[in-house]
Image (cartoon, rainbow, N blue to C red; front, side, top):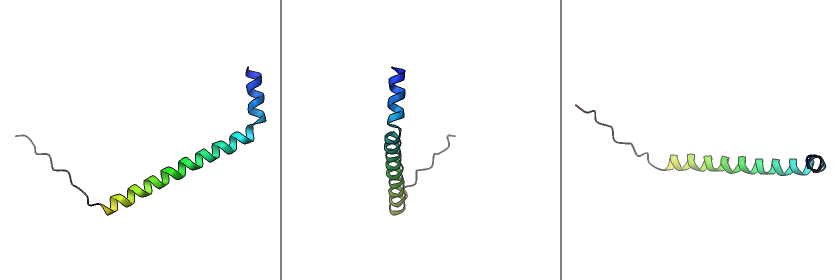
Length: 57
């Protein structure tokens, strides 16, 4: 089984590299867009301040 798997990976190495780089690039782009949208949203919406905690006597 190990020999088969090693041969399979060696034979398809380039395909795996293209697939992994594509998935990685998609994930990076997706999260970059998400962060950008959140930052824009936070700038456009008014800040809601939390009420201050009162100290107990």
